[in-house]
Length: 138
Image: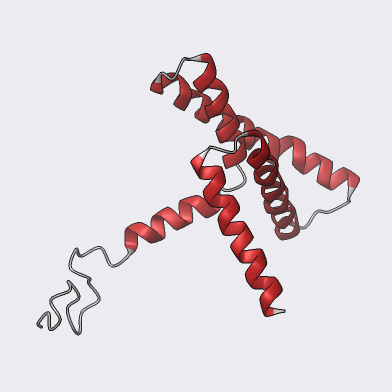
């Protein structure tokens, strides 16, 4: 097999020159999708501890970890009880759709509180693109 165009892509092969087959991007996408509901909690913890710790890496990432733990407790215990009791929803798939909608609302609100946070900016721009595409397609 030869690299006909000398661009790193080998004809007849699934590799693009660095032998990762896009696996790393898939892992990153999966982590982002599964962590999406917890990211607002992690961002708030990170930003608060960044301020309290004076920018020390260990402290601000400890805040992100604390935010993840609080997000897990919120969604697995508190929010689940609220949804089950108030809305009488027991279907797990419907619950997680509501969770992702709630997380999207949280990101929208974080856009006003932390407008310079890079992750919030990226998530909001992706969300705007998806909404614009959906409105354009309908």
